[in-house]
Image 1 (cartoon, rainbow, N blue to C red):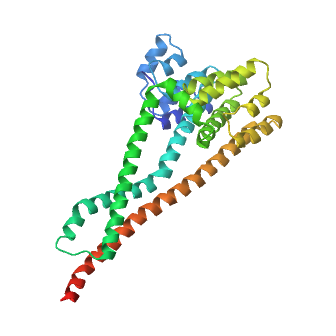
Image 2 (image 1 turned 90 degrees about the vertical axis):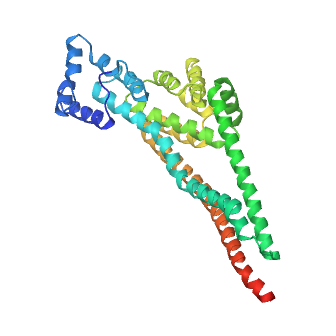
Image 3 (image 1 turned 135 degrees about the vertical axis):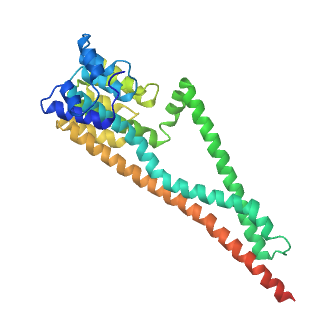
Length: 321
Protein backbone atom coordinates (compact mmCIF):
# COMPACT_ATOMS: atom_id res chain seq x y z
CA UNK A 1 0.00 0.00 0.00
CA UNK A 2 2.05 2.91 -1.32
CA UNK A 3 -0.31 5.87 -1.59
CA UNK A 4 -1.97 6.04 1.81
CA UNK A 5 -2.44 9.78 2.18
CA UNK A 6 -4.71 12.14 4.13
CA UNK A 7 -7.35 14.20 2.36
CA UNK A 8 -5.30 17.43 2.44
CA UNK A 9 -2.38 15.83 0.61
CA UNK A 10 -4.66 14.37 -2.05
CA UNK A 11 -6.07 17.86 -2.58
CA UNK A 12 -2.55 19.24 -2.88
CA UNK A 13 -1.57 16.61 -5.45
CA UNK A 14 -4.66 17.40 -7.52
CA UNK A 15 -3.98 21.15 -7.44
CA UNK A 16 -0.33 20.74 -8.46
CA UNK A 17 -1.17 18.33 -11.29
CA UNK A 18 -3.72 20.81 -12.62
CA UNK A 19 -0.95 23.43 -12.52
CA UNK A 20 1.17 21.28 -14.86
CA UNK A 21 3.29 19.11 -12.58
CA UNK A 22 3.27 15.33 -12.95
CA UNK A 23 2.38 13.02 -10.09
CA UNK A 24 5.95 12.34 -8.95
CA UNK A 25 6.87 16.02 -8.99
CA UNK A 26 3.72 16.86 -7.04
CA UNK A 27 4.45 14.48 -4.17
CA UNK A 28 8.06 15.70 -4.03
CA UNK A 29 6.90 19.33 -3.76
CA UNK A 30 4.54 18.31 -0.94
CA UNK A 31 7.45 16.46 0.74
CA UNK A 32 5.61 13.15 0.65
CA UNK A 33 8.00 10.16 0.88
CA UNK A 34 8.45 9.07 -2.74
CA UNK A 35 11.05 6.29 -2.60
CA UNK A 36 8.51 3.44 -2.79
CA UNK A 37 6.61 5.20 -5.57
CA UNK A 38 9.79 5.73 -7.61
CA UNK A 39 10.68 2.05 -7.19
CA UNK A 40 7.17 1.06 -8.29
CA UNK A 41 7.56 3.14 -11.46
CA UNK A 42 10.93 1.47 -12.13
CA UNK A 43 9.25 -1.93 -11.79
CA UNK A 44 6.95 -0.95 -14.63
CA UNK A 45 3.77 -0.33 -12.66
CA UNK A 46 1.42 2.29 -14.06
CA UNK A 47 0.08 5.18 -11.99
CA UNK A 48 -3.38 3.67 -11.52
CA UNK A 49 -1.90 0.49 -10.09
CA UNK A 50 0.31 2.48 -7.74
CA UNK A 51 -2.63 4.56 -6.50
CA UNK A 52 -4.99 1.65 -5.92
CA UNK A 53 -2.86 -1.42 -5.17
CA UNK A 54 -3.78 -2.95 -1.80
CA UNK A 55 -6.11 -0.14 -0.74
CA UNK A 56 -9.66 -0.47 0.54
CA UNK A 57 -12.27 2.07 1.50
CA UNK A 58 -14.83 4.35 -0.11
CA UNK A 59 -12.31 6.88 -1.40
CA UNK A 60 -10.35 4.26 -3.32
CA UNK A 61 -13.53 2.66 -4.67
CA UNK A 62 -14.55 6.03 -6.10
CA UNK A 63 -11.01 6.77 -7.31
CA UNK A 64 -10.84 3.46 -9.19
CA UNK A 65 -13.98 4.33 -11.14
CA UNK A 66 -13.04 7.93 -11.96
CA UNK A 67 -9.51 6.98 -13.08
CA UNK A 68 -11.15 5.03 -15.91
CA UNK A 69 -13.00 8.06 -17.28
CA UNK A 70 -10.83 11.10 -16.46
CA UNK A 71 -7.30 12.27 -15.74
CA UNK A 72 -5.71 11.72 -12.33
CA UNK A 73 -6.30 15.24 -10.98
CA UNK A 74 -10.02 15.26 -11.80
CA UNK A 75 -10.38 11.66 -10.61
CA UNK A 76 -8.93 12.62 -7.23
CA UNK A 77 -11.24 15.64 -6.96
CA UNK A 78 -14.31 13.57 -7.85
CA UNK A 79 -13.40 10.78 -5.42
CA UNK A 80 -12.87 13.31 -2.62
CA UNK A 81 -16.21 14.96 -3.44
CA UNK A 82 -18.01 11.61 -3.35
CA UNK A 83 -16.42 10.66 -0.03
CA UNK A 84 -17.23 14.05 1.51
CA UNK A 85 -20.83 13.81 0.28
CA UNK A 86 -21.28 10.36 1.88
CA UNK A 87 -19.76 11.47 5.19
CA UNK A 88 -21.73 14.72 5.14
CA UNK A 89 -25.06 12.91 5.58
CA UNK A 90 -23.87 11.16 8.75
CA UNK A 91 -22.17 14.31 10.03
CA UNK A 92 -25.41 16.26 9.55
CA UNK A 93 -27.40 13.77 11.63
CA UNK A 94 -24.82 13.62 14.42
CA UNK A 95 -24.37 17.40 14.66
CA UNK A 96 -28.13 18.03 14.62
CA UNK A 97 -29.05 15.44 17.24
CA UNK A 98 -26.03 15.60 19.57
CA UNK A 99 -27.11 18.53 21.79
CA UNK A 100 -30.79 17.55 22.34
CA UNK A 101 -29.76 13.94 23.05
CA UNK A 102 -27.09 15.09 25.51
CA UNK A 103 -29.61 17.28 27.36
CA UNK A 104 -32.09 14.42 27.52
CA UNK A 105 -29.46 11.94 28.72
CA UNK A 106 -28.27 14.36 31.40
CA UNK A 107 -31.83 14.95 32.63
CA UNK A 108 -32.53 11.21 32.59
CA UNK A 109 -29.42 10.37 34.64
CA UNK A 110 -30.19 13.15 37.10
CA UNK A 111 -33.75 11.88 37.46
CA UNK A 112 -32.64 8.30 38.12
CA UNK A 113 -29.91 9.28 40.61
CA UNK A 114 -32.21 11.64 42.49
CA UNK A 115 -35.21 9.31 42.68
CA UNK A 116 -33.26 6.17 43.61
CA UNK A 117 -30.49 7.52 45.88
CA UNK A 118 -31.10 11.05 47.16
CA UNK A 119 -34.87 11.18 47.49
CA UNK A 120 -35.26 8.17 49.85
CA UNK A 121 -32.70 9.71 52.23
CA UNK A 122 -34.35 13.13 52.14
CA UNK A 123 -37.83 11.90 53.09
CA UNK A 124 -36.76 9.69 55.99
CA UNK A 125 -38.45 10.81 59.19
CA UNK A 126 -40.87 13.19 57.48
CA UNK A 127 -44.60 12.86 57.11
CA UNK A 128 -45.43 13.67 53.50
CA UNK A 129 -48.16 16.19 52.80
CA UNK A 130 -50.70 15.73 50.05
CA UNK A 131 -48.91 18.15 47.70
CA UNK A 132 -45.46 16.64 48.20
CA UNK A 133 -46.90 13.13 47.87
CA UNK A 134 -48.36 14.08 44.51
CA UNK A 135 -45.01 15.43 43.36
CA UNK A 136 -43.30 12.23 44.43
CA UNK A 137 -45.86 10.34 42.40
CA UNK A 138 -44.95 12.51 39.39
CA UNK A 139 -41.27 11.71 39.89
CA UNK A 140 -42.03 8.00 40.03
CA UNK A 141 -44.18 8.25 36.90
CA UNK A 142 -41.41 10.07 35.04
CA UNK A 143 -38.93 7.47 36.20
CA UNK A 144 -41.07 4.68 34.77
CA UNK A 145 -41.42 6.71 31.58
CA UNK A 146 -37.63 6.98 31.32
CA UNK A 147 -37.28 3.24 31.87
CA UNK A 148 -39.82 2.67 29.12
CA UNK A 149 -37.81 4.92 26.79
CA UNK A 150 -34.59 3.12 27.70
CA UNK A 151 -36.15 -0.26 26.95
CA UNK A 152 -37.47 1.12 23.67
CA UNK A 153 -34.02 2.43 22.76
CA UNK A 154 -32.37 -0.94 23.51
CA UNK A 155 -35.06 -2.77 21.53
CA UNK A 156 -34.56 -0.39 18.59
CA UNK A 157 -30.80 -0.96 18.63
CA UNK A 158 -31.34 -4.74 18.64
CA UNK A 159 -33.86 -4.44 15.81
CA UNK A 160 -31.51 -2.38 13.64
CA UNK A 161 -28.64 -4.76 14.44
CA UNK A 162 -30.72 -7.70 13.21
CA UNK A 163 -31.60 -5.77 10.04
CA UNK A 164 -27.93 -4.95 9.51
CA UNK A 165 -26.84 -8.59 9.85
CA UNK A 166 -29.65 -10.16 7.79
CA UNK A 167 -29.77 -8.44 4.41
CA UNK A 168 -32.87 -10.16 2.92
CA UNK A 169 -34.91 -9.26 6.00
CA UNK A 170 -33.56 -5.70 5.92
CA UNK A 171 -34.70 -5.14 2.35
CA UNK A 172 -38.16 -6.59 3.02
CA UNK A 173 -38.64 -4.33 6.04
CA UNK A 174 -37.36 -1.22 4.24
CA UNK A 175 -39.61 -1.85 1.24
CA UNK A 176 -42.64 -2.13 3.54
CA UNK A 177 -41.72 1.03 5.44
CA UNK A 178 -40.74 3.30 2.55
CA UNK A 179 -44.32 4.48 1.95
CA UNK A 180 -44.92 5.01 5.68
CA UNK A 181 -41.69 6.77 6.65
CA UNK A 182 -40.93 9.74 4.41
CA UNK A 183 -37.31 9.85 5.58
CA UNK A 184 -36.54 6.70 3.57
CA UNK A 185 -37.67 8.25 0.27
CA UNK A 186 -36.01 11.53 1.18
CA UNK A 187 -32.72 9.76 1.85
CA UNK A 188 -32.88 7.76 -1.40
CA UNK A 189 -33.64 10.92 -3.40
CA UNK A 190 -30.87 12.88 -1.68
CA UNK A 191 -28.27 10.18 -2.31
CA UNK A 192 -29.40 9.87 -5.93
CA UNK A 193 -29.00 13.61 -6.45
CA UNK A 194 -25.60 13.73 -4.72
CA UNK A 195 -24.09 10.94 -6.79
CA UNK A 196 -25.64 12.16 -10.03
CA UNK A 197 -24.29 15.67 -9.50
CA UNK A 198 -20.68 14.47 -9.46
CA UNK A 199 -21.20 11.95 -12.27
CA UNK A 200 -22.95 14.55 -14.42
CA UNK A 201 -20.05 16.95 -13.88
CA UNK A 202 -17.67 14.28 -15.19
CA UNK A 203 -19.88 13.64 -18.22
CA UNK A 204 -20.59 10.01 -17.33
CA UNK A 205 -23.31 8.47 -19.56
CA UNK A 206 -26.59 7.75 -17.78
CA UNK A 207 -26.47 3.96 -18.06
CA UNK A 208 -22.87 3.82 -16.85
CA UNK A 209 -23.76 6.13 -13.98
CA UNK A 210 -26.60 3.80 -13.02
CA UNK A 211 -24.31 0.76 -12.97
CA UNK A 212 -21.85 2.65 -10.81
CA UNK A 213 -24.46 3.87 -8.32
CA UNK A 214 -25.90 0.37 -8.02
CA UNK A 215 -22.57 -0.79 -6.55
CA UNK A 216 -21.82 2.08 -4.16
CA UNK A 217 -24.63 1.16 -1.73
CA UNK A 218 -25.40 -2.52 -2.08
CA UNK A 219 -28.37 -4.18 -0.38
CA UNK A 220 -30.20 -0.93 0.33
CA UNK A 221 -33.30 0.90 -0.85
CA UNK A 222 -31.01 3.08 -2.92
CA UNK A 223 -29.58 0.08 -4.80
CA UNK A 224 -33.10 -1.26 -5.40
CA UNK A 225 -34.14 2.13 -6.76
CA UNK A 226 -31.16 2.30 -9.11
CA UNK A 227 -31.69 -1.29 -10.24
CA UNK A 228 -35.32 -0.51 -11.08
CA UNK A 229 -34.31 2.61 -13.02
CA UNK A 230 -31.64 0.73 -14.96
CA UNK A 231 -34.05 -2.03 -15.96
CA UNK A 232 -36.50 0.55 -17.31
CA UNK A 233 -33.73 2.32 -19.24
CA UNK A 234 -32.68 -1.00 -20.78
CA UNK A 235 -36.29 -1.49 -21.88
CA UNK A 236 -36.10 1.77 -23.82
CA UNK A 237 -38.05 3.99 -21.44
CA UNK A 238 -37.01 7.64 -21.46
CA UNK A 239 -34.91 8.76 -18.47
CA UNK A 240 -37.41 11.50 -17.50
CA UNK A 241 -40.28 9.00 -17.49
CA UNK A 242 -38.19 6.62 -15.41
CA UNK A 243 -37.57 9.25 -12.74
CA UNK A 244 -41.19 10.39 -12.64
CA UNK A 245 -42.58 6.85 -12.34
CA UNK A 246 -40.14 5.59 -9.71
CA UNK A 247 -42.03 5.38 -6.41
CA UNK A 248 -38.83 5.19 -4.34
CA UNK A 249 -38.06 8.88 -4.96
CA UNK A 250 -39.87 11.67 -3.15
CA UNK A 251 -42.29 14.21 -4.59
CA UNK A 252 -39.81 17.10 -4.56
CA UNK A 253 -37.37 15.08 -6.67
CA UNK A 254 -40.13 14.16 -9.12
CA UNK A 255 -40.96 17.83 -9.62
CA UNK A 256 -37.49 19.36 -9.89
CA UNK A 257 -35.13 16.96 -11.65
CA UNK A 258 -37.05 16.39 -14.92
CA UNK A 259 -37.12 20.18 -15.38
CA UNK A 260 -33.34 20.25 -15.11
CA UNK A 261 -32.97 17.48 -17.70
CA UNK A 262 -35.25 19.26 -20.17
CA UNK A 263 -33.53 22.64 -19.71
CA UNK A 264 -30.00 21.12 -19.71
CA UNK A 265 -29.36 22.51 -16.22
CA UNK A 266 -29.41 19.21 -14.37
CA UNK A 267 -26.35 19.95 -12.20
CA UNK A 268 -27.86 23.22 -10.94
CA UNK A 269 -31.23 21.58 -10.23
CA UNK A 270 -29.55 18.71 -8.40
CA UNK A 271 -27.72 21.19 -6.19
CA UNK A 272 -30.93 23.17 -5.54
CA UNK A 273 -32.81 19.97 -4.71
CA UNK A 274 -30.15 18.91 -2.20
CA UNK A 275 -30.22 22.34 -0.54
CA UNK A 276 -34.02 22.25 -0.28
CA UNK A 277 -33.97 18.73 1.14
CA UNK A 278 -31.36 19.71 3.72
CA UNK A 279 -33.53 22.69 4.70
CA UNK A 280 -36.56 20.40 5.18
CA UNK A 281 -34.49 18.04 7.33
CA UNK A 282 -33.15 20.89 9.45
CA UNK A 283 -36.69 22.10 10.17
CA UNK A 284 -37.81 18.60 11.18
CA UNK A 285 -34.74 18.00 13.33
CA UNK A 286 -35.24 21.39 14.98
CA UNK A 287 -38.83 20.50 15.93
CA UNK A 288 -37.75 17.14 17.33
CA UNK A 289 -34.90 18.83 19.20
CA UNK A 290 -37.28 21.36 20.76
CA UNK A 291 -39.60 18.55 21.89
CA UNK A 292 -36.71 16.61 23.46
CA UNK A 293 -35.43 19.72 25.24
CA UNK A 294 -38.90 20.56 26.59
CA UNK A 295 -39.24 16.99 27.84
CA UNK A 296 -35.83 17.19 29.50
CA UNK A 297 -36.58 20.56 31.11
CA UNK A 298 -39.87 19.19 32.45
CA UNK A 299 -37.89 16.49 34.26
CA UNK A 300 -35.70 19.15 35.86
CA UNK A 301 -38.70 21.33 36.75
CA UNK A 302 -40.44 18.51 38.61
CA UNK A 303 -37.25 17.69 40.50
CA UNK A 304 -36.92 21.33 41.55
CA UNK A 305 -40.53 21.38 42.78
CA UNK A 306 -40.01 18.16 44.73
CA UNK A 307 -36.87 19.51 46.41
CA UNK A 308 -38.69 22.74 47.24
CA UNK A 309 -41.58 20.85 48.83
CA UNK A 310 -39.18 18.68 50.83
CA UNK A 311 -37.37 21.77 52.11
CA UNK A 312 -40.72 23.06 53.41
CA UNK A 313 -41.43 19.88 55.37
CA UNK A 314 -39.39 20.89 58.47
CA UNK A 315 -41.25 24.22 58.59
CA UNK A 316 -44.62 22.49 58.43
CA UNK A 317 -43.57 20.18 61.27
CA UNK A 318 -42.55 23.18 63.41
CA UNK A 319 -45.94 24.80 62.78
CA UNK A 320 -47.63 21.69 64.14
CA UNK A 321 -45.82 22.18 67.45
